[in-house]
Image (cartoon, rainbow, N blue to C red; front, side, top):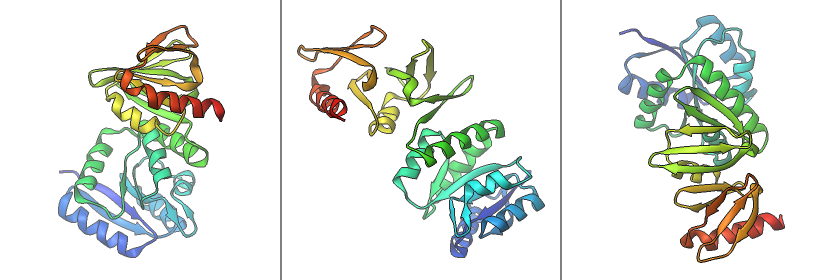
Length: 250
């Protein structure tokens, strides 16, 4: 079995020791060839050893993980981000469809992250990291949609609505384009719930910015800017109207 040559980057020596022991126990195909505790050390070790994979902590005393990625001359390696719990940072990772593990590292999450690394090309990784960097510097504004044909990086402002079909979700964009993703609408409800989107029906999430009219009824329906009429379910009506009211006031 060909080894995955790996560097561990973390400002805490204890975290490196723990991660290395977990790797030795649960992922024997990984060979840890070096470690680093600062941005400068990480850049030097990556350029020197040219690893296949880097476990990269986000926060370090002399910078962050993104500086490491920007400044290395050698670029042809995969990345698994390691981070302490930070709700905003995690949201950004999810928007960018990037894999990460939280501290303290759990063995099953570690194994899962490595399996996903094996399935991700470096070209896809570059696109995801670019979107992640943008979202971390600002409010999350870009969403990566993985499809069978590749990655689609879209602005939230482009999404008019999402529609569920079994375990697939279709995104309807302002350009008229449709993108089908093999994830449930529940996934995107959880991801978008803190922004200007609202699930108004079991099958539908709408961007509140594109609602032109709400027509009352038992549940009623909304008229969107593209002329579509989308039903509001009776059970979701109250929460929808509350969010719509807050959105229009803001």
